[in-house]
Image (cartoon, rainbow over all chains, first blue to last red; front, side, top):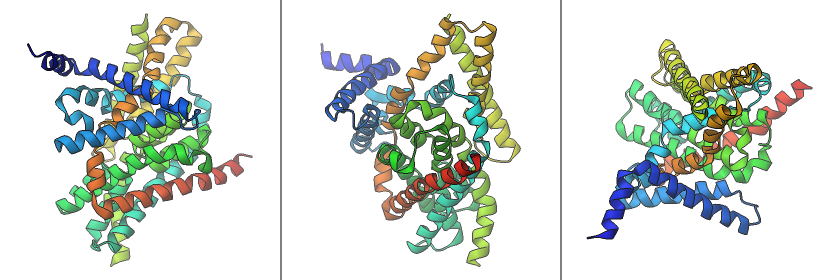
Length: 255
Length: 121
């Protein structure tokens, strides 16, 4: 009787429940670590960082693309952290949000969304141009990838970009979402991320649902619904603008 | 009962996601446009109504509050399934444009905030 193998089998078979236990332990440890820093670094920020480290370990040991969930025993974490539970939990945070704040921020939200898509797009295009991909389709695809890792491949597929450029655009989007998760708690004071309006601007400018979700969790969970409200329109807006208006504009500029 | 709150939350989620897909299809985009946002609006409006009218009692509310409290753990789980390896292996162009893109976006927050705060006064 192999006790270890039997235990692993139970964990694999009951993946989602096992992930509740596992994430609970990670949260406990990281919040204790936060107490060591006298609360200077928020527990959730450490927990998210620990999650990213585990994601790296999971990816590097298996060669899989789903981080920790690439290891069969931890596949349940993929369910718990997947898009369905993420969005379900984000929606639930709106319970107790102030509708007046959201209404007040309508125009700001739209402006930040457009600025967010536009600025990311331009950055990606310019970087692609100077780093060896000076053709319009590649530039636009990388630019779309800097928006989010969904906008990149959608745009690339629409314009017929090569698969290596599409891969770069996805990677650029993943880099962005991971960076937003890690950097937000450190720059929150510099950029004034402490009220519903700035949270909506933040959501609109960053746009990555995962990045915004984790970033605001590490700053102040009360701000989540405001950031999520604008971020949820970002990928759609990007998919709308990048392969159309922004592509044509780039083409016109590049000649 | 708690399930009433969970069911209300789930109903808002499903209808919101559906609207997001429909909206995406209408504008010709292969993505969900604003689904989470629509769902949140429904939830805010319905929970306010339900509490005022009395049909959303505190036990039902606890069903929604539970998922709200599970938000950070779910985000931790989410961070642990990111393709961090691909992000690091993406090469200088992917990493460089990701870094600059995030830096520019952060720099824009106080600027947009300032413009609209002045207007509000």
